[in-house]
Image 1 (cartoon, rainbow, N blue to C red):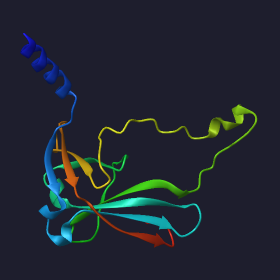
Image 2 (tube, rainbow, N blue to C red; image 1 turned 90 degrees about the vertical axis):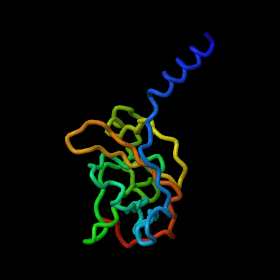
Image 3 (cartoon, one colour; image 1 turned 30 degrees about the vertical axis):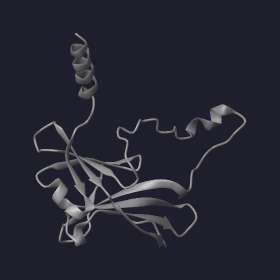
Amino acid sequence: MKALYIILALAISSCGAQKMEQTYKNTDFPKSQQPYAQQWTGGAPGSGSGITLYFPTEVTTGYDLVAVYFRNSINKNVSYTADDRLMMVSRFRTDFNNRKDVIMDLDSKNEMQNEAPDLEKFPFELKDDEAIIALKKPNSEKITYVKLINIEERSQLALPSMPQ
């Protein structure tokens, strides 16, 4: 009877967990296609900052990209790095060096135009050198998750303007 309760508890708790279809280490790819992250900061005050994640297109072969989860941020937009289309880029904005137009007023009605904070809970527990790529097959609703681990951190870029 006790075993039945344990099995039932495990079945219920595992239903909500997302299962990784595949986990890749950076060494699973050729040196020129290993995933890496690089922080950037704009040169002018308020021009912004962020982290750019580079990962091989091999991860997404046969799938449509749904989202990239990295360092407690979610990005649904990616692009290719070059014409060879071997690497993809996902850019995540950070709060450092970003200009926030915040209205502070004694009358709280005047502060209603301030942007509300994002309270969406991040769905994964990831280390700083880990990312999750959410994918789905064309004409399918089932989402597949691929995890990248041991992502290399490259030196920070100081840019005269924000990357496009």
